[in-house]
Amino acid sequence: MELTLEQHEALASGGNVRMTVDGLDCVVVRSDVFERVSKIISEDWSHDEMRIALARSSEGNGWDEPEMAVYDQIP
Image (cartoon, rainbow, N blue to C red):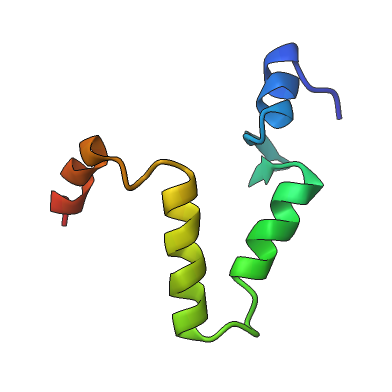
């Protein structure tokens, strides 16, 4: 699989690349990103552990910034 320069840059910055492969919607991410996410969604985590991890992830990605509060109003 060959990626464009824009796709390489997205992956290098920790982002993702969406694509369709043989009719399947796929997302390509770096392996370190995949490992972190797979730990979060692992069945070994309790519901409370998962909520805490997601809250930390949200804070670490700036989702707790005041301007993001508008999204709390969306049902």
